[in-house]
Amino acid sequence: MEANQSSGISTPADLKPDDFRKIGTDEKQAEIIQRESISSWRDAWQRLCTNKMAITALIVLLFIVIAAIVGPYIAKWVFNYNYYTNDLLNTNQRPSAEHWFGTDDLGRDMFVRTWMGARISLIVGLAAAMIDLFIGVIYGGVMGYFGGRVDSIMNKFSEILYAIPYLLVTILLLVVMEPSLPTIIIALTITGWINMSWIVRGEIMQLKNREFVLASRSMGAGSGRLLFRHLLPNAVGPIIVTVTLSVPNAIFAEAFLSFLGLGVQAPVASLGSMINDALTGWLYYPWRMLFPAIVISLTMLAFNIFGDGLRDALDPKLKK
Amino acid sequence: MARYIANKLFYTLISLFILISATFFLMKAIPGDPFMSEKKVPPAIQERLYEQYGLNKPVYEQYFKYLGDIAQGDFGISMKKINQNVTDIIKDTFGASLKLGLVSIVVSVIVGVALGLLAALYHRKLIDNVAMVLAVLGIAVPSFVVASLLQFVFSSKLHWFPTMGFKGPMYYFLPVAALSAQPIAFIARLTRSSMLEVLHADYIKTAKAKGLRWYAILFRHVIRNGILPVVTYLGPMTANIVTGSVVIEQIFGIGGIGKQFVQAITVRDYPVIMGITIFYGALLMIARLVTDIAYGFVDPRIKLTGGKGD
Image (tube, rainbow over all chains, first blue to last red; front, side, top):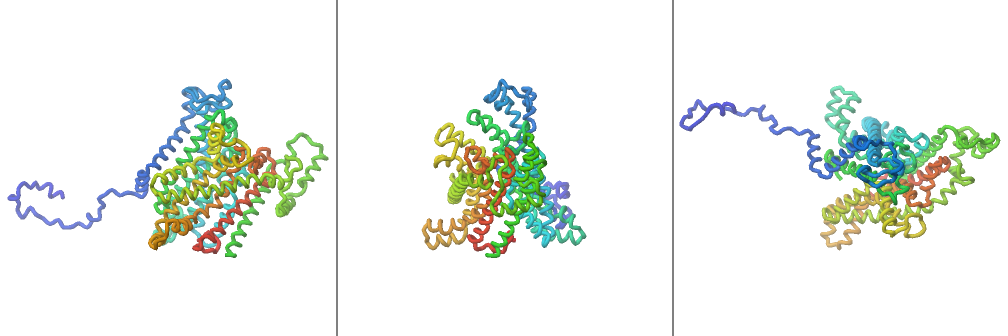
């Protein structure tokens, strides 16, 4: 190519046989990939970007997360309220320029409390999902990798646990342990990891007979290396989807527990406990319920839609 | 088939046994005993109370007695409601919950399947889009939010339905709607995707080619095959409706078993909490068992060898 450009040909008459030379085919050149290579992650990301619903859900989620982080500070800087400030002269106020979301029965600003509640709900949801992930991946990985007797015993055990209704166990545990943020998260994860372990087990069982595992094994890789370096990274798509879809479940379960008085305890509030508090005066002060209800519904909606979108993008086989 | 059922039954019993044992030992793990926090009682009366509730015996003896009592359907005596048997409390309040639950299950299945079927038949048309938006909303909006909204709009503002209580047919509408919103959404999504698959199957083409009328195709081929995934959802749906009713009964002031449960948790009435937990647990496990067995009957393609089909 360089020779052609630098030779400066003007007219055909100037051409002499010396101007020509054989280029031939270069086998190395033929192997060069012209287009930029796309990793499977970029491929998934591009597929996700074409899904307008999922991207909208992602933006809504980011907005909620940012609001849950900075929302309480805004009210503090602008109006000098915090989470606990109660103004007993202004209880149950409608939304106004000063109290954007109104006030509750103790005159506390609902804007601050809604975003603090969202923060608590998100922490519960994410922490529970992370613990489920940790236990589920290890348990499911061991089940799927070793198979045989180990698998059938561990699988039976998880099935027996799974048959016990999830919320009943959680309620029992919280009746015994005092409800607080850590105990709620522990109670939520006590049987929550089982679903994750089954997903991981299924993936590992499919993957472990593939050639790349055999290749790695023949080069002397041990069980731990095979599991954590080769098998699990290849199962990461379904794992991420399961995590995304388990966050709203945990948020909902915490809200449900708040109804039984087993959620986070006052003065800390989650979205669920705020809705529960608002229930008594709901017919007269609807805004006290409306804002937490909108935020919790939007959060769950966004997580569900984004999770579905992720599943379609990461794992086209799983598409419903 | 008999082996499959026996297998499922065996594991259900183990699960139930674990639930009962866990309930018992968790309650025993709570420091102190129910009669300690009350105002000072003379030692003689304290003794008497311990004896009446069997608290003076060793824990393992209490445990075996408890197992024996439960086997005979006796859940002990409430600690807060004087002389009330837990079994009686469950019996008295279960009726209302059962009616509410059964109506909700029937409504969920009928409306859910109808919605999913319509969405599949009018795939990518307006009905499909509306049904799927409703389904996503139904899954994402928690049932207590739905309940409060319905109460606010239809009874407080429009006065169409009563706000509280459970006295006649009009009292059913709002709680049933709130309870079935989520199951309807799930069933509609399940039905839609499975019907879409069935509608493109070769045997539907065959049925059309041999000139069957549309309703014969719909009822004998499409619905019968497309409804299978819904059968698997019946167990989880029962769980969903039972646990949901705990909150819904509270919101609509229905004197069912769920309301008793919430009350018992609030005042820490341990025998009632234990009794209702075990009762709910047994109920839900039976629902799961029935679902598993029903699925075996409905879908002849499933090999009934026990386990999860692997």
